[in-house]
Structures are given as C-alpha cells and as structure tokens.
Image (cartoon, rainbow, N blue to C red; front, side, top):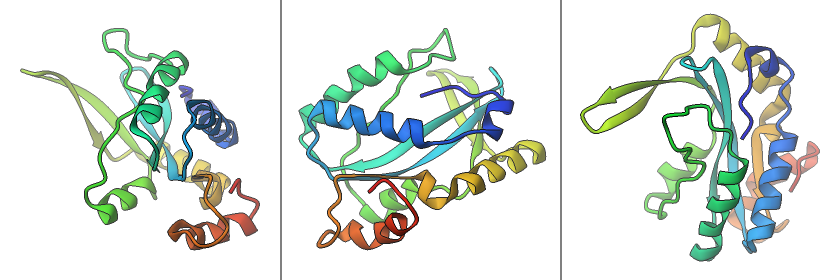
Length: 173
C-alpha cells in the first residue's frame, strides 16, 4: 500500500495498485477467482491517505496465507508504534454482508484511540474539504477503476454479470 498526501489524492490512479495485487495473487499461486474494491482511509494522526483493497478470494488457505509475508514487505508502516496489518482473512459466513462490504461509495477518516486493550481505530466522516477530494478521486477513477477482478471467467460464474460492464469500459477482467 502506498500512503498518500492530500496532493497525491488529486492525481491518484488505482491501476498501479491493482497490478501489484494481481502479481501478489499470481506469485502466491492463488487459482482464483477474486473480486473486490479499492478504498482509502484518511489518517489524521499522520496526515496520510491509505488506499487498500477489500477482496473476496477463493483459493487454498495456505496460498492465501503466504500472501501476508509478501504484503508485509511492501506495506508502508505509517505508525512506528504499531505492526502493520496488511491483510485480514475471514471465513465466508454471510455472503451478502461480506460482498456488500467490498464496494464503498465513500471514503472515511480513521482515528486512533487508546483503550484498556490497546490502540483501536474508529471510522468517521471526512471534513468537507477531504470529502470533496475523495469524491473527486473516486469520480476520476470511476466504478471500474475502483473494482478489482482476478481470474473471473467471461461467463458461467456468478461474478461474470457484475464484471461485464467493467470489461466494456476498459477494465482489467
């Protein structure tokens, strides 16, 4: 992940991050398919935007776990007092809830706070200025630009219909 300053958000293009994630999946030997979305959270403590993916990935657990090591090497640590967590793996429990979490129509601010169990974070609405910046960045990228797909067949897969629009708009399917 690449930490972005406010100025960087204005020229943000997700294609580089999408290509990098695709390479990580390929090198891990994940046979696919995977689908997801890109979002960015603003971290006021360090004044950085952190773009990241939420993906639903079907594959062998050890291969997916091996991606964690690769991602840790490539993750920018913006908090010196915290170990980066570039990847969260969850079992598929409620497909409707988990798939709807993949695609964000807005970006947020993530604030850290201390509890008796250590540091935690909570999401808040962005201030008007950063909200406008986020909306412009998302508009420039377009839905297809914020969508990630990997090894999804052109037909016969439940995700194919969702991606058919992306492919006609120059997506990476």
